[in-house]
Length: 139
Image (cartoon, rainbow, N blue to C red; front, top):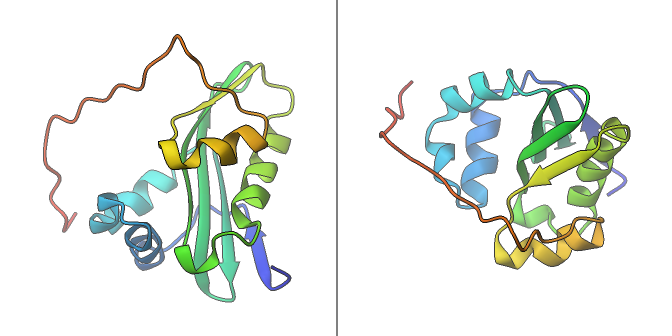
């Protein structure tokens, strides 16, 4: 992990995002230009780089006073289990140290990772989503 650099830039190229998102099997990687635009609108973005290769990313929204929501945390599978996800999350948690609530959605296989970082399952809340349209991958 010594050669991995953490950056707080929101200027991440579409091709870098496409490669990273598709490496973890996320369909949104098929919309790299939209991803690049979206990344530029997050409240906080931290990325992990191996030289010029994007290998990890965390993004969140916040209200600046009480609440933050983590939208993305992903690490290229070739770089997983090397502390990159924990380092990215640590950067974000440090930024939000004065906020009351930090929320995220987790897949079952990632719950232990988040619990080790201090997150707890909310037994009274359920993840919900609404996808109403198909995006044009070229835009």
